[in-house]
Length: 373
Image (tube, rainbow, N blue to C red; front, side):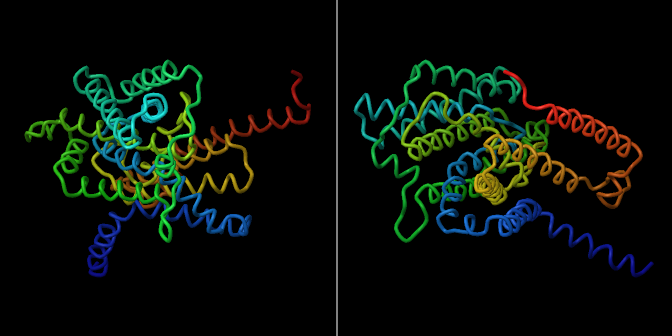
């Protein structure tokens, strides 16, 4: 009895000490798994400095948006319009420098400002019109994408000034690529906002319990608008970086920005139920997805498998963090015991039966040959 009472506090203290690092453990384990797999399958092509440079530049594109999305999700929000906002702001920037003769720096500032305006509109739709975040931002995504299609009418804007190209793929001699520096600076600013300012503390309070935050005097709607405006500004910056990286932009650009960024933030340990997030975790999530996609490309897998892999990573990550956060798992002390309850066993048998039937159908279809078109 005495040994149990002596060891239990130590175990609890260990869990308490490690709980803050759970947002890093999941992505780091997955990153290590990717490195081990690629070390066996494609060590020569994957472990090259030039390839790691590609991975960093790909991750940098999503860092600013991951920073802002962390704050949005911490407040129990979601923004599905960032891809359209990025495309729209980049198109406006392209017109300003190519058709209207404005200097590049003014066009970049206007793009980021327009993104902040789009985010502000999103926040007003959500807080003033009381439209749920998911529906409101999804509807505004259609609006912003429609503006993109109206503005360019199928035209591809290309050949931007060298300064804009440098924002997307420039190099700082003897240092990191310029877009990586921009991404890391935004994440550092996000960490400061999240941990050292009223906006970050209020965002956590709103996400933990909006009603209690309102009762304590926090202007919940006002700070939600601030967070969405920041999200729009970072989407505008990402649009500039995308245009510089490709040296071109069109109405259909950035179609999967929202899912990619949300995946990175969730993988990094930010709770979809609000109240808890991590900027360092979001950075690790962005790096994980960039490494995973690069590994699929290195293995010459089809583009569509990237979406499959991203979806699987989201499901595994959310399930892992949800299990970690549950202090009382119906009296079960381990994940295996929780999964092997009678009800879960019946569900798994049903799932395996469905998978077996589908495998049989596809197998028979493969034996019968390709379809006639």
